Image (tube, rainbow, N blue to C red; front, side, top):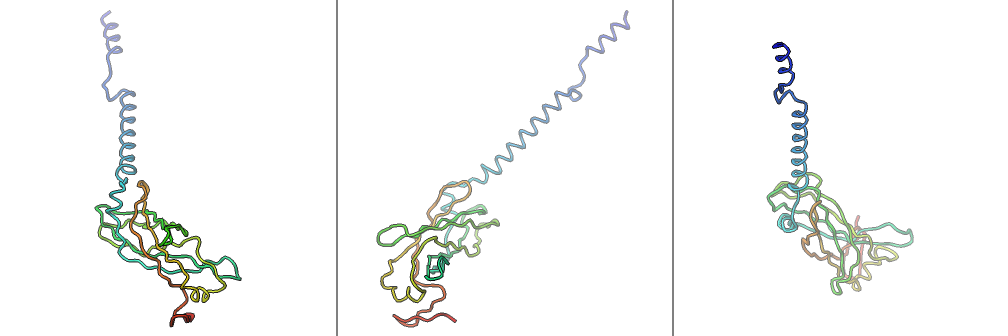
Length: 200
């Protein structure tokens, strides 16, 4: 009789916690949960930049502008504004995958002429470093019979400026500055007023 009691006692006794399947299932669920929280923190929270931080982290340190060809029709010339610039990371964290939206507007009226967008800084740009040149070209511009015809009519050109905005993958658009677009046409060299010559 005592042997039977001992047998039932052994069956009814609980095995150690680490030998129970429910324990390991719980450990696995907790581990997956922690991994997901860390992933969310790294990809969303840690990489998130506020608009203020974006404004404080990006400085345009050099820029140039020119009007460039846009091939549309063989019987006419179309030129569009192009803005090239470099930025410096003035923030505390590396910059990466920054989108730049350029709005080209008429200086006098503020009316939009065209816009252009580019995503740049594909590799992380450490704090204090300067980027490679970034170029943004407008979609629309001026039309004429030829490039030299633009030069002859340059006195009638309306002054254009560009508003440049930056955006990271998690921020809104932030205005970096407003810059004038020069009255220069790619491939045309002005010798004297009213005359033009193609660059060799």
